[in-house]
Length: 336
Image (cartoon, rainbow, N blue to C red):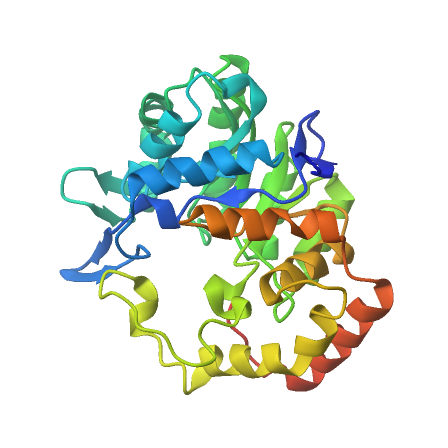
């Protein structure tokens, strides 16, 4: 049964489900390498067959928007998404990202800003191959703090890719308003991806989206799982899960757990689970926003998709949550 609300993705003519699926977790283990150091950037081991079943479950429930990236599993996420969507390409909107140097065999990624413009065309071809498609709907720069002057030059290359039919639209995954504003001026820029959840807002980027008729694609809508409540009582994480380095008894992880408890009754009052309530908050907050919760199982996809059947929170609930969060907000917050 399909009950999915849709939203227009910025200035494009693309209608997407109001909740998408973020495909970071289904990439499996991979590492970031920097100056000889190496640390996990994935979400632990995955079952590819379950990932594909989960994507199919999302399609059955009306989800048609999928966000991935070249570095998620150093290409593995794109490959699995491409397999799952075989024969269904015309039913979906695919967003992927570029801007890092990946080694598919070694499962490693590193950043080199000087290579972004020289490599963007080949990066696009590589993503098209892994996704098994002729075009990408939204092609997003994945280097959050890329220099604005270089970004302006990059827009010219992306516009060429649009004219060649390799991509339809583009955007930038960044939490920095000054960077977002640079891309916002591009003729075929239609979205900015940034962190947004009931405990962390980015009002300035939301205002830029409104000013330039862009969509906000919301990463970390569940604060990387914390807002589902599963970390409140502790949980064991694999060493290949990037969250295994977190200390849930201090800092931002502890704060997020406390913030969740402070609004638990509000976000579950309408019959939502904690995860559904957190997503329903975003849907009520701003009609331009499209949250993309991550997933690894069919159950997670089904729970998140049901949010739209239950509906968004009320304006009064949103205002009450914001008042509580403002009182609990530290001087410097994290974008998780």
